Length: 435
Ligand SMILES: Cc1cc2nc3c(=O)[nH]c(=O)nc-3n(C[C@H](O)[C@H](O)[C@H](O)COP(=O)(O)OP(=O)(O)OC[C@H]3O[C@@H](n4cnc5c(N)ncnc54)[C@H](O)[C@@H]3O)c2cc1C
Image 1 (tube, rainbow, N blue to C red):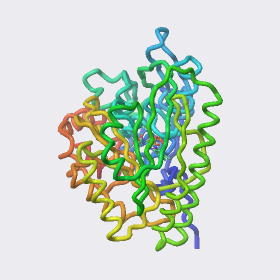
Image 2: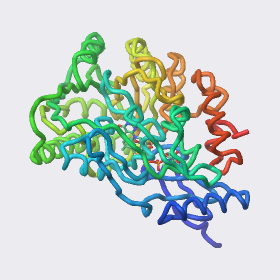
Image 3: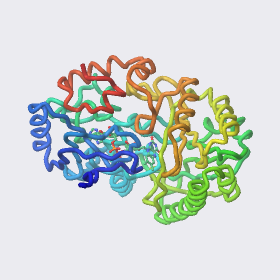
């Protein structure tokens, strides 16, 4: 019996696989524009993809999948006044951060890892941790894209709130312009603290520090609290090496706990306690722009909801009660990250409210569907909006009620992609059909 063909594309987490009829790497904008026009003419569909770090099929395509890594690859132009950078859409955050660092500059909103592309990270609302820091797209000043009709355009000022976070539904981003700032050094410290104490003090921590976040260690009363402050030091290479070493040590214990839970799921509580027992306090200094470098792979599935900052305590208390009551197989730390209110992007999960993003992860190979549904229900009860790159089961009908400017986004989408060339089954689920 013939075996089904192996998927030609797989996401970072391995949960999403795609076998598109065409996997294309245009080498010029003209080639890309001709491709979009041709796909539209034959009534097909096309999806841009970055490096596949989204946990959902948001980049998946059945017909044509477009990779941007051969197009103007790694073009990074710093403005003469040093206040902005123009970069090709398929450039990874690592390349961008490195190029900016050599000029003493940074964009301090990259999130945890530097593997994603700038276009992919923008398109799903990627964010970092800090109540004074909006998501990455708040640094965005301009976008050039090939829209669904095959037209190359710098997006009009009036359409930028749609294009800043567009899920690849408005066009294929070829270049973006971002505001940059001088690079800084963050002095960070991570401490093991009782969850009760973290919850009591977190609003103050978030207000007082440039970086603040915590991770609850499930099945225990402990949390890891991470705080960071901008210093006036100059970044040095040894800071990067030291930080990488700290992260490898941290990864090691998380990996062990994860493997133990995967092998003995009924003993997840024990594995979580092992993780708490091996959690150590760490202090370090690091260039503030740096997301994590490649590390030993700890693949996981993830979900996250942005909830109003003032519901943090009841939400975590209810999650704690749920985990204890049902002995849920939750081992990896539950991460809580504050993000500033944002009205720059109509589909921003932080739209018009100070938020905390609560993220739940499971080691790859462990069941997650039931667990994620429970956490989703809990977060929805507190007005949560899902992260656009992480797992959730909401559809357009429910999502439309969470975003006051939903119809404005839909109208820009209709104008830039009238035929639905950029549609996919997943986009139809979360955004609805183009018309
Ligand atoms: C280990 C890990 C850590 C993470 N940490 C964080 C974090 O700290 N904070 C956070 O907020 N998120 C985080 N994420 C989520 C991740 O940053 C986002 O999912 C991001 O979208 C990934 O970028 P990508 O290049 O991999 O895009 P992909 O996953 O390939 O695509 C994502 C979306 O971008 C669109 N897209 C890609 N390229 C283009 C283009 N050129 N034009 C138009 N649309 C395009 C796709 O169509 C799709 O809709 C993490 C993910 C992983 C796996």
